[in-house]
Length: 132
Image (cartoon, one colour):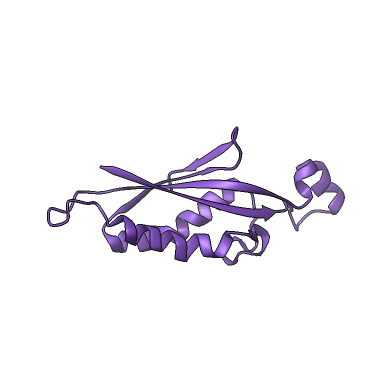
């Protein structure tokens, strides 16, 4: 069985590789080298067996709390360049998916579920999926 929780957040970022010059960054990232933001949607999909006592894989209110405490509070209306779990990472949505996975995997396991997929919609035309 799979369940998915959707959350929304707004965040800014600036694509920058600190290992290369400003000129190389401008060439590599184009307009995304400048600070800009997105209104993101994130989908957290977990898998697991249905608990006979509860009839659920996990309690969705517990899943919502973990997502909010570990992710949303830290990134909503902030710069991804400054978020603790994004430090020293180029704040692409690809890297954001991976880092969110690392933040959520163990807490979701503690609920009795298994993290299956992170999907982030960056724009109406671009989305990113990570399966660990």
